[in-house]
Structures are given as C-alpha cells and as structure tokens.
Amino acid sequence: MNWKTFGAMLARDAHVARRNAMQLFMQTFLQPLLFVFIFGKVMVGSGYIRGEYKSILLPGIIAISMTFTGVWAVAMPLIAEFQWTREIEDRLLAPISVGWIAIEKIIAGMLQALVAGLVVIPLAWLVLRPGVEISVGTPLTFAVIILLVAGFSACGGLALGCSIDQQHIGLMFSMVMTPMIFFGCTYFPWSALNKFPILQRAVLINPLVYASEGLRATLVPQFSHLPTAAVIIALLFFDVLLLVVGLRQFEKKAVT
Image (tube, rainbow, N blue to C red; front, side, top):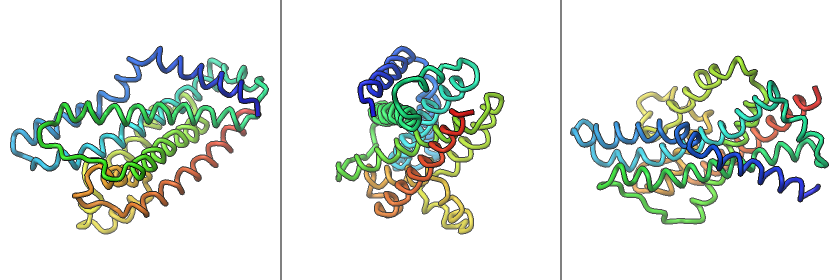
C-alpha cells in the first residue's frame, strides 16, 4: 500500500471539492433548507403543524443532506471518469491496488457528507429558531452514528456510480433517491407509520430510515425513535453490504 499516492489522490479530491464548494452547496443544501423553511417555519408559523415538529424534522434533514452529498460526491465523478472523461485510467496507473482507489473515493465522499451534515445543524437551527430543542446527550454515540451514515452514503455512491450508465443518471434520482428520501422517515418518525403496519415493516429495508432514526435518537431523544443499538447494527450491515457491492462493481468496471 503506497500511502503517499493514496494521500495525493485524497488531497486532489479535496481540492476539487473546495473549488466546487458553491456548486456543491446549491446541490446539497438548497432542497433540504427549502423543506426546513416551508415545513418548519411557514407551516408551523401558520399553525397548521405543531411547534415540536421542528425538532422532529431537523435530524431527518441532516440525514438527507448527508446521504445526498455522499452519493453525489462519489457517484457522479465515477460516472464521468468511467464513461466520458476517462480520468479513471490515470488513477488505475498509479502504484496502488484497484481496491484502494475505490476506498479513497469512499473516504473523500464520507468527508464531504460529514461536512454537509454538520453544516446543516447551525443553518437549520437559524431558520427554525426559536423552538428547536436539540441536544447531543451522548457525543460518542452521535459520532458513531454520523460516521456510519457518512459511510453508508459514500458506499452507496460507489455502488450506484459503478452500476449506472450516464444516460440513466436521471433514473437514479427518480427511482432510487426520491423513494429513499420519502420513505426514509426523514420528515416523520418511524413510529408514525404504526397505522400502516405493512409499510412500516417494508421501509426497514431502506438504510435512510436508520440514518434518520439514529440522528433523531441522539439529537432529540425525547421523541419516539428506533432503539439506538438496532440503528447501529443496521447501519453497520448496510455499510458493509454497500462496500462489498461497490468494490465488486468498481473492480469489474476497472478491468473492462
């Protein structure tokens, strides 16, 4: 393992992310902040939704931002590099194994997802205040969950980026990302589906459910949420599953 080469590739991706910071901000924060403003400010301020909904909404918005950022940061460059810029060919010539090139992509995506999630907290708090009651009672648990969420989003981006052709990019968002968000317990807790028992069980295959519920458990534990242990186990499972699938797809794409 050539750590110098690995670090150079990671530094290059960090430089590209900084250069495209404004574009990244518009792509990843605009939609969540609009949801925060409409549902948390307008609807609550008009009396159509109860005030405590602000606190329930914020963890879901963080989960959306992290997921969207991680997937976008890994999947879109991979689609471009494999299919029209061919930049991936230069990386494959580096003195480093193919698998570690994919791992570098995941780490770069995780870092961007972490930044997106942590930045949303003060931004959304400014939009929603007063009335938002969030607290990190167990910082270690919060750190574990937010790292696992970042890992799932980046590994998911690797799997999608190596499995979808450029002409199907729109399909990826309409058929994968949109249902994941709306059935990911981002705008409501999982317990809100108790009147729809079949749907409540079906959404458990969605990793975003555990991201939203995990952040809800650590930031607003006073509201209903899935058990923290179950969330951590499920996120670990999805991280490993998506990592294995992503690495397999990356290696298959790299040698063809």
